[in-house]
Length: 284
Image (cartoon, rainbow, N blue to C red):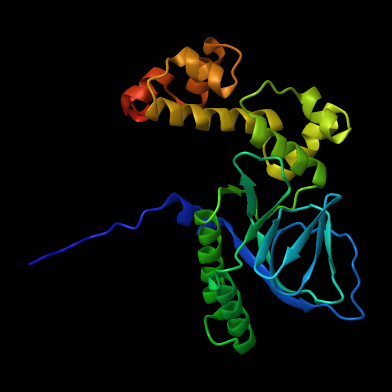
């Protein structure tokens, strides 16, 4: 007897399934009444070109798009599209809440383009969604959501996209999104409230108040959480000293790092590395 078992445990699929939510799907084809107006959405948009050619404009940057191109636009990024009259643009758009994409070597970029000119798989997923929504058979919402999860994972497999998780029940103001993105991409660097406030051109008290209102956590605590998450990963996977890890993740000193780590985790960095749990530490 031969038996094989494969355990399906994946951080990517779990995170995508629990966070990304399909809000809408729409189709469009260029006609004489096409109105190209720059606009924003509080959700991300996945924009797939079914046919034709045109230009995509985002954050004052213009690039050409053609059949098989897929553009991901992050939340609150101003964008629009124009069509070439000789080859009318046709596309499918998904609105996705709780999702933000970034690229490892260009983390500050607000939109990304991928080329699937010789790959019909992506378009097949989207066409399946349209068929499900058109038929509205029992369970069609779940099928569309599952197709979205598959689509996102396929995107990450075919590129260097990474997924960032963002609150789904909370459409943050643009200033708070700007601050959060900066912290996400620069948390290992020195960051102050004054620096963050300068990004959105308001005083630091208003900036901190708005951020806390929109995300339920202060910008400094959000920063500390990111640094602690990274430090935990380094403690588990490297032989770096505590001092080295403190420097890598952006703490001003190893003493301050250890103080914050113990306060948050209930144990010291050394104990965490040794596998001591907070319950073992307290003897409970």
